Length: 90
Image 1 (cartoon, one colour):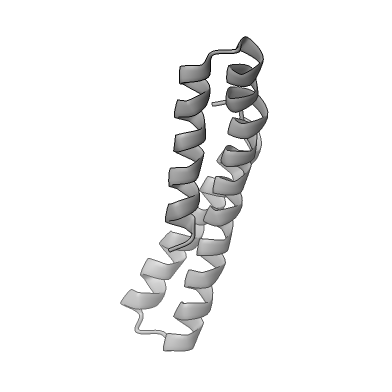
Image 2: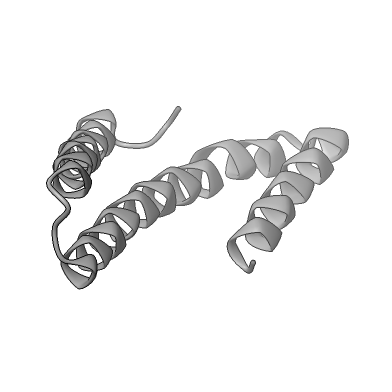
């Protein structure tokens, strides 16, 4: 992975902490809207981590395939990005 490992780990550990908090909130039968707000905050952190990974993939892996002139690898990497974009659009 070419993304900033420290940044990705920080985001993932923050999301994990929020998930632990969410589990506790559900166990304590907390107010639904409070739980929903925390769920959305956790999702935002995970989206941010995914964005960092995808940006790094484009800047490094896809760029390298183009620069090497490896048409098959370039096509594969473009297909991967399109697949991820399709999933994000759902």
